[in-house]
Amino acid sequence: MDTKTHDVEWKKVSAELLILSLVEARPRHGYEISKLIEQRSGGAVRFYVASLYPLLYRLETRGWIQGRWVEKAGQRRRRYYRLTPQGRKVLASQRRGWQVFAAAVNRIVGVEQG
Image 1: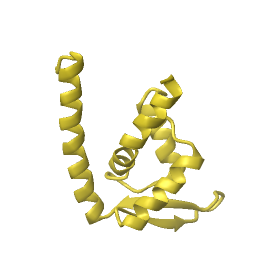
Image 2: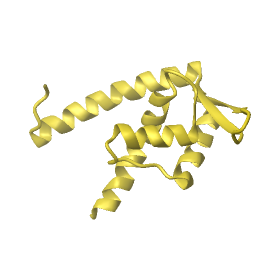
Image 3: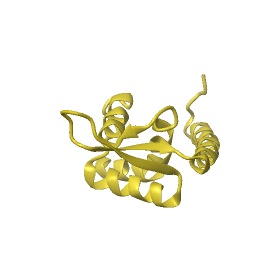
């Protein structure tokens, strides 16, 4: 498997968790979410419009996030997403699952927990 294929697989597994985590603290628009993921991952993880916006739509359809259009003077209209109560429960569950999974993988590959 090449590096690009690995990136796609990791993204599928973690995308929902990343997005829900970023809108937990405050509402954010899609471009901001994309840039934060890239910035906080040191450029290792990137989401492009073609994959990010359909995912935001799916999360909204599931009721995990809620979007609202905001217009500001001198700027284009943007859709801001916030975490819903149901999304908060899903995020808590996904975080627990991720911690268990990451700890198990680290034990298998020999990475020590600090």
